[in-house]
Amino acid sequence: MLCLCLYVPAFGESQAEFEYFESKGLPSELKSIFRLSLLIPSQEFSTYRQWKQKIVKAGDKDLDGQLDFEEFVHYLQDHEKKLRLVFKSLDKKNDGCIDAQEIMQSLRDLGVKISEQQAEKILKSMDKNGTMTIDWNEWRDYHLLHPVENIPEIILYWKHSTIFDVGENLTVPDEFTVEERQTGMWWRHLVAGGGAGAVSRTCTAPLDRLKVLMQVHASRTNNMCIVGGFTQMIKEGGPRSLWRGNGINVLKIAPESAIKFMAYEQIKRFIGTDQEVLRIHERLVAGSLAGAIAQSSIYPMEVLKTRMALRKTGQYQGMLDCAKNILAKEGMGAFYKGYIPNMLGIIPYAGIDLAVYETLKNSWLQRYAVNSADPGVFVLLACGTISSTCGQLASYPLALVRTRMQAQASIEGAPEVTMTGLFKHILKTEGAFGLYRGLAPNFMKVIPAVSISYVVYENLKMTLGVQSR
Image (cartoon, rainbow, N blue to C red; front, top):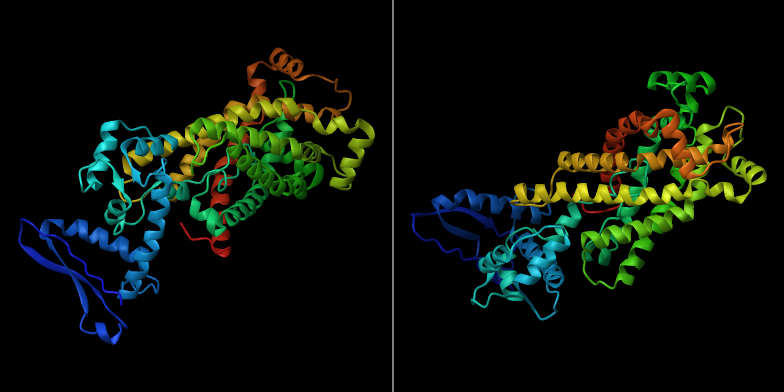
């Protein structure tokens, strides 16, 4: 027999009865209980109304806008499971209690720094017995009737590299909550992210190919503009030529994402942490190493993508023919041309992208995350766009040198040069501006790429049965 009683203390002002939960389909023993009433002061009505709306939104299973008795009980049971996971993630000493230091450490792991006084203020709001620690009962009683607002919620709503694809898979992998790992939702997120990346790259492929052409062929004597570049591509190979190199660019998403995720998880274990979330500097180290491992594994596909984008009509019959030609004429070493600048570019790209995204995220959380950590579509898109743009800007000279080294054999009579030699040559002949050839189409594709990948990701999530944001 389950009997649910809900008491709300009402002090001060005159009391009034505002809302109730209808009890539908109750056992015969509980027929006399037809509603649960809340008596609250009139000045607290707005707070109560917000609370009631959040509870109904979280627990209303039949979407009738009302919360009946069974739905309310189901909500409490489901919410308690989530609270238990959060409590365990915060209880780093595994002593069954949370103190101020553990609260500070958990927030510091997310890049949010608070003082000890602020942590103690948080504790006092939940501490019933004055011990300045919170046990499970105090934690549960305080949070049970509040939709979850905690570290896993931040992880859930603020995914970055899984959602946004701008053509460069050099970002630090996202974290997944304990619940996502236990329920197997993590692989659905990765599949949705891979599908979103494929659609996004295909839609922005003409701009990506134009960027590659400008990186390799543009110079002071051959000043290639955006309109002229598109006109030249269409004139040489027709509209279909705008998508040259896109096939291999899409194919490499799956192996690169899978290798990077597995490498990231192994590096986390090697670091020896059992935390749900790594510290910022640990994420940067683990993410950069995982990116280097993934890039090393699929780097020949990067070279093929560049050569296919630069090919002329009829030069190759396809990706396999291109690979055979490179192997026969240049040897296996050609598949790793530009490898060093590519590896060096991971650190500035991943580091600045992560730092900017975390800074924007924390700024928003501190100012606006009153009732939920969900930033909404536009804030998430803005943060992703700004951080990706900053990361690309920092690593662009290395990306340009990498592309030119990959394309060396595709330019007749081009001398074999090293990374440092190519840097000196560009600075000498074109100046510092020469290191940013193709930057305009590269930036032009960021906003559409981020927007498209987000929309596709959200739709694929629903198709795969992942809980909607």
